[in-house]
Length: 310
Image (cartoon, rainbow, N blue to C red):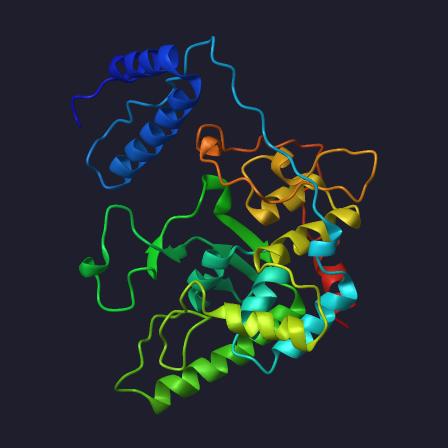
């Protein structure tokens, strides 16, 4: 691997593009991801794929956009209903992180108390829980294979989010429960610092929330939407209330503003957070525009969230 040069990578891309454009794109994605992983593991010191593009005759794929179906998102009153009903369930914090902070499922499971800035009331999103590449279940203790700390989707996913008062107070209450369980189960408690954890301190699995969430929807006559649609709900509420698109993009951890919003004749049509492609790795830095208002407090994010929560 250490002998791979940019010329080798370019030759590979040229060869694959001559045979199949779609395969060439897949090869490029696989090479970028593999070499980034090798860099992170210090297997190589220089990334040979950096700056290497497909032949010019291969057009770049356009960003895919898709309108959010409002029947698959919640309105403000339904959000309040869900939050209130979730207080009596073990997924209350997960609901808050999804619908009021817009976190992805695996990001929620990776949030720790040490990620909270208690002075400025912000959350630093810097990890998720999942499977480590090139590993098997036998490499880890039982029931921990899918609960490993791994990096986030893109560089833009590493972000700092302002915490509404309601969520901040909920975090403080959850911390009290955490400390109580740690004292009660001092011999068996796993002090891993996760906010969303079991009474023994163990991190939650990626599907732990599912039965509780579906029951909440049924019991409260709420739309039968996916968990990921709570994140879309968060995005939709902000955009419909004229929040700065770039600010929303940063809150969501999107690589580019276009992934968050586009301009349509019908303002109810918004971009869904549906891109799972790795292409943003190639160009994942959103240019900073001095004229663009990206101050979340000035955009009214905290004030608006706090007001509708009462």
